[in-house]
Length: 484
Image 1: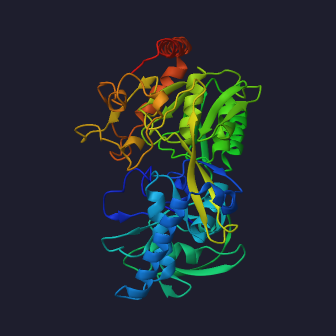
Image 2 (image 1 turned 45 degrees about the vertical axis):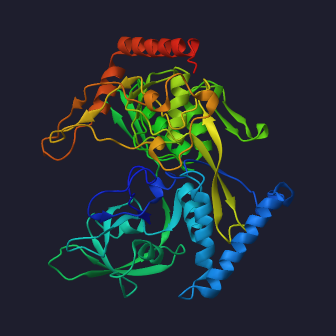
């Protein structure tokens, strides 16, 4: 089951409108960003490193807990008190450190694997209107039990194994629809709202959520990476092979679309970058201690053989997608087109608690830096070709929040602060937004940024000049460091 995403970046803003969305598999890493799965345990944290004063504070916490447990007006649930205390402690750190319950931890593992046992549907739940309270199908995933059973977009699931969905939360309904591979589930579905529901029996199966989609655009390949799961590198390489078969002489270039990609696994971001780079540094991560620093290096061989690349990014491109964009930009391997990225330059390590039986900590442990040494934390990556777009009916560009707007967001490290203040350096250049249109149906927006990317690729001379100019501008910036 894939719950429809709350927003392009679940951590940055809530969805406005009548629909309530729960963070889904496709954006599971939005808050977590680039994840590093560790095998750490609480034993790592030596008691000798904790001061006597800290132990006195822990005694204070114990006394407060005891007083609440004994004297609160109602019988408190001790596990809820402990979870609340843990959540409160992590909330004081940064927006991406959090506690995962055992169930949340299991869900996160499924999401980063990109596969789970279920029916294969993207779902949401309406808060208003005639469909209020029912599970609504956003879309079935191809070649899954739901798709094979004929489930369609806008169908409503009103009963699960004879139990009315009304009164369930979306998470509860999704939990009931998940299960072991090969097990059966009975659901009642409403399609025509004027007719009675019909019953379906489905057999749960392994569902693989594709993080990579691709298609041919004339002589060029188009690859969309929606998130970085364990499936990403494999999906990208498969797409490149298909381009070689489907385009006579192979693709003349590539559009890599990472707009509204909230991030995911760090190793997959490195692998995707490595596909297009011929060795060299891809990203470095730096933690609190020198031993926590690491440089990720690529391997020889560019799978696209130096053919031109245009990367699409926007304010929803975060974390792992910024690693890829930053690496290709710094290495002068691609032109970046769109708008400034989100600016999430931190790495979260997932630390299982009691082998995952008590959930896990998702803890910010490092910052990451592009090959030239740029930290993009709270800054974001500026595209080489800035192209904001608006559509008829929009008076102006929406003010999309970024990492710097999140409560307790990490500031840029002191050594990385430039002459301008963070607020000044984060200002978007004044560029007139490009007015896009809708297709003939009047509803489907024309993708002006994609069209512009294809135009640039079609003119090899213009592409090469633009890439050279962008590289020269970055070299000039690097040779004229700003000081406070």
